[in-house]
Image 1 (spheres, rainbow, N blue to C red):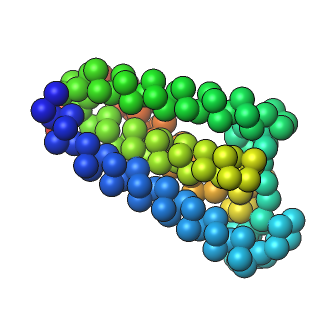
Image 2: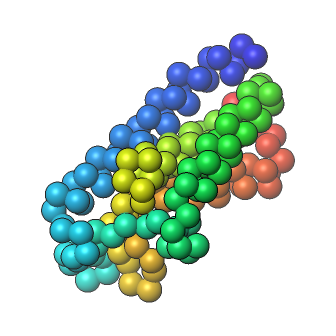
Length: 154
């Protein structure tokens, strides 16, 4: 349990940094691009101010209330799991912080405006935001950690 307490400030700082970066970039995108408009940045990148009331990539339609509840339950479950595993958790805290920060960033949007602000547009890919990047990266790193057997205890 001592190890969990020692890692907690780092986890909270990383989680907070993801939320601040996500919310800051969304605010910047909203100030630069009117909702529904698009601004070409590079040939392969545009900023497009959209709202997503569904799950990832707009799937599922308008289910924000359900997503808010499910997100809270899943985040609490992840925190309890990590706290119980304690010193066995290894490097799982960093990807967990990415996942938590991304989920909290999108949750803040859902609570505040009933939808998530998406603004990064790549060709042949749905519009997304930095919270989505953090969530995907966190999940991939958690899967990699699980695949490796979680044997890295540093």
